[in-house]
Image (cartoon, rainbow, N blue to C red; front, side, top):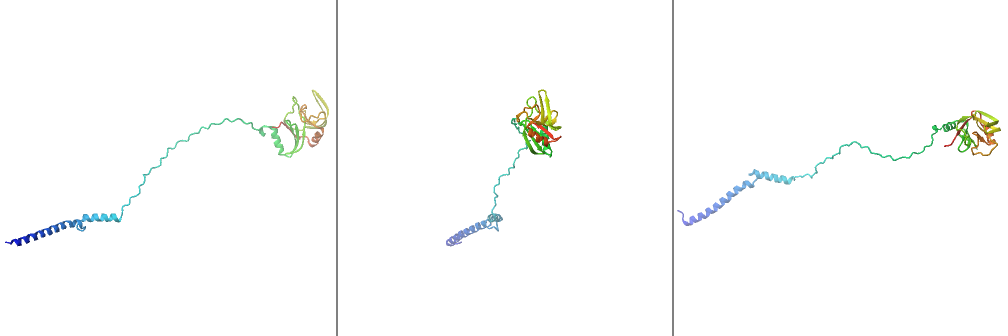
Length: 230
């Protein structure tokens, strides 16, 4: 049997040993949780943490969803209604092709021929050589009721002195007469001085001196174009 002193000493030492044993046991129980080598789960968590620190996760920028362009369906072309404005007819100049006299003049100007032009409206006679005027005089053509007919003709005969008769006239010694169509002629007129005004019975009256120049210049077959200017 132990003495009271020995028993008291042994009891105190046993409490200290029990405390050390309890501490040691608790430490051994916690060691696997803190040591990665003894705790694989802790090792995996640590590696994941380290990996997360070394390689940060890159979050791509937010991209709006792709919205395809929607093209409207093709529609057939619509015919536009065009309102035509009322256009007043404009009088066009008479083309040469519809006026035989102007057509003849155009052709004669392209030649070197001598030809005579009688302008009824302006009461003028012009002598031409091709497209060049060589002589121009004031004349007197047929009065109302005896108008000088327009047309393209040619001198048929020449008479230095002629007698002209009609229902209401009889004129002898008409100088430098050149007939170009039936009884129509270009001749000198000594019985009046109204040149520039239509007073004849249809012939083309010329002052005697001008009639002489024309008589000597022209010949049988010389074209004569009578027309009213446009």
